[in-house]
Image (cartoon, rainbow, N blue to C red; front, side, top):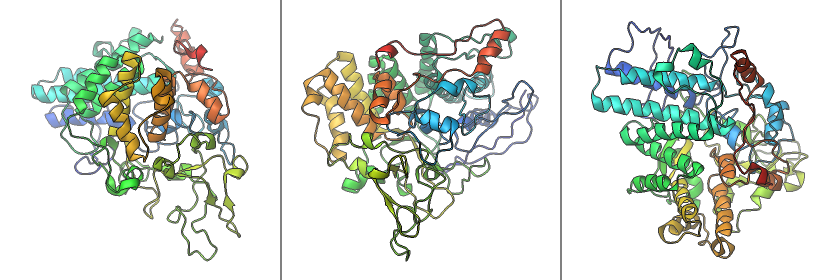
Length: 536
């Protein structure tokens, strides 16, 4: 049934790699530990290695690789941040093709992407197979007789959370895509050839059901890096906010608001920046993070790694600001990056309020590694560099890659989502604890409570909240999703990116449409939500 070479990403504490040889239905799974290991394979798309392959093949039977959801090259920063308003088009030193096009929010050539995910062509469509694989594992768990009922629910909940996350990401990359969620249909030729888009409502419900089951049946104990019931609540809250189920979003907030989490405030004015540093992993604010290993190097045997610094620092950045090498720059331990694939649009930077300490994680100049140590500034944008430098995940150790955890769910995000859900439910400026939630986030940033236009009308409040989310959650993999929820994707790209988004979602690749045709099915290539025409 399956041959797994499971080289799962290593994380802190006890969430370490387990390596298996060839396994078959005759000898696996048989014990509770086997069933747990089976679930663990579903974390592979959510690890952080250069790529992975779990049975992905092209029509010729050749293996094709997929990007994990958190690798900068093709994961959520590339899909949901660099394509959004916070990133200026990568026009200087770019690698051409899809790198430049996606930074411009230009999706026209995405129809030419193949099955394998590469740097220039980050294709995730083949992850519909990972959904099927998750469904098969869930079906196996449902039939298990050698594990306790509680463990069975826990494992199924974990598997359904991971399947739900696969579908959630596919939905926000492409819109609804064909998936198999009934274990009885795995291997059914008719079901597997039914390559048509489900309706938005149908896919929203599939994701909702997985997240809801997970948050009810998972536990909050376990090693750091392994998903929990609280992370499932976070995912369901976010999903419900996106899709207009505000009562359920508020319910999930109440389930999380138990005192387990609080804004990280140690260090005073530096608290916002400090929370992302390696010495403050899994602090009071972290609901979930991708736990990164200092030994990680992008291969599957060494654990999760984080190469983000190589994608945000210009290639010609100097280690020292002077030729005598006595004044270190923020890049002293690494030097220049590969290229500045991701940046911060200067116009977006200008939206930060005076005194907002969160903008201090953005560098507005850098010293070039040349004979006279030239300082490149805003005036050089578009000529010597493409945008300001993200220093939210700073270079802290002299290592090939940094051991900085990737934030997946923070309490600050929960507070902002709660205020938004309350406002959207009543279609009014929120008061009471909902407004206090925003005030707490802003206070840590050194800012006063909302006032003026932000409290004068519902529309003014929503505009201010969207800006607040952009400043608080910069490059945490959710900006494009936020912009679509506020129906401001095309509008904000014009303002801060200077380009017009060609599509709301990435069109499906031609190979998928053509494959559907061979089965007598029509797989609609493009998708947009209601209201896209009004986003100008």
